[in-house]
Image 1 (spheres, rainbow, N blue to C red):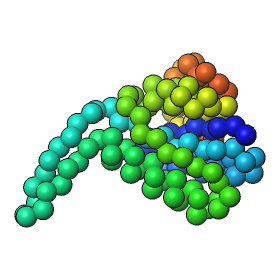
Image 2 (image 1 turned 45 degrees about the horizontal axis):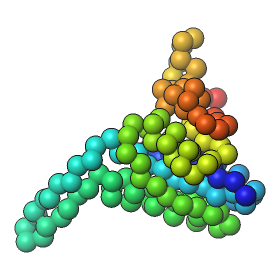
Image 3 (image 1 turned 90 degrees about the vertical axis):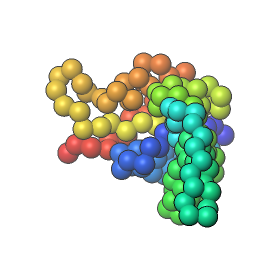
Length: 143
């Protein structure tokens, strides 16, 4: 079986793309890797009253990917899913994840960009031009 990659950032557009990827992966038996990018490698310690919280960008990105993966499994119980937090800009993170997982397909959403010069959003365009595998553009906006 193969591997599908999808990036999430907390937006509805990304969740729609992830949902479509989950539907297809559940039907085909492929594994879906839900990727969340973090562009900073910060760790911050926050004191709130007597509690100390450690906020780490990689951990936060990983938590987001896991929350989305859990929602996808609720919708698609047959889904085989993994999560990854990748350092870098979204395009770079998706390309890196695809290479590391020897992915067959990267799923991206089209976004509400308009005009003759912008058919796809910047992430989708960047992935399409640099992907080491096929790219599936999910219709996430528009009529």
